[in-house]
Amino acid sequence: MNNPFEFVMALVAMGMVTGLLASVEQDLRQRLLDLEERLDFAERLLARERGPALPKGQ
Image (cartoon, rainbow, N blue to C red; front, side, top):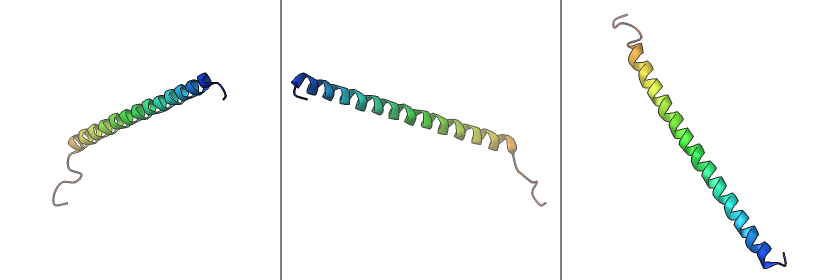
């Protein structure tokens, strides 16, 4: 790269890729948090509906 413009454009491209990767990572984290929240809700719902597994004394 003998042209300073090429160097600047390469830096801009690297910054855009880094920003894109950070955005994707943040989106994946949010999706994981949403899935964990849904799983917790489903577990609580099942535990509430299920009740005791066996009556006491048996």
